[in-house]
Image (tube, one colour):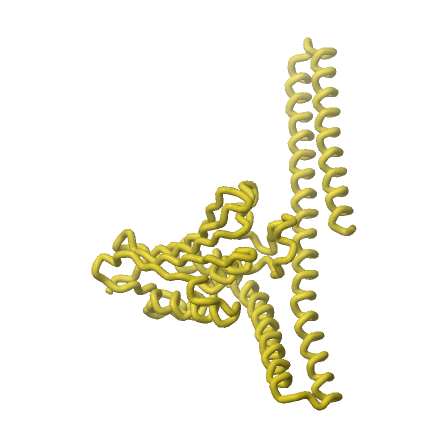
Length: 302
């Protein structure tokens, strides 16, 4: 209800702005026709009306952007609230059950496993929010060292396998020629692990029922390392490909309704890539045709 209300507000301001611009143009044209002989007044009149039109256009654009930003912020708050409340409620329920009932040992172990999983989910959500705030701080992450990027990718793949309970064939790894040298990056190891894991995590979550994620690491040039993560999942509509790296932005398609998240993962990836002098971008042929996310980083000389 709240989202549809905001969309109605956006439509209202957009129509209002267009109407005002059309009215100003009509008044301007009418005034020119009636006063075409008054050269000086005509000139200043045109300038005056042009400024009015420009001001109304800028004002309308600003209002629409602010409303959309507010909508995304509300969606983020709702998503984070859900991501925090759900595991907390689950842990509480399991603890109350353990307290009140004498359960067999296998069932107790299953309860412990579920609670640990919920605790990991809580930790991940909190870390995402903290890292999103840290991403805007230019002073953060200045501690740099030589990082073995190959090992970072492998560690993150193992973490993804454990967290999502993946079979080996669901997450495959391929490495191209490295031109006879290692794959070192000059940067912050924790930030790089976060970026790689977020890309992998997104690929798994948006794979749908059939998870087939392919990871390829290569060094096509002496000064660059390229990581490509390709899934065969739900894909991305063309109009959303460039927007998915914005803060709080989430693709709002029906097929993605079951995917939970805060809308911060890829924003954090982009921020980390830029801090390390690299870039990240996504490619998709459309809905249902999978997505490839490419992370490029400067290669540190050995």
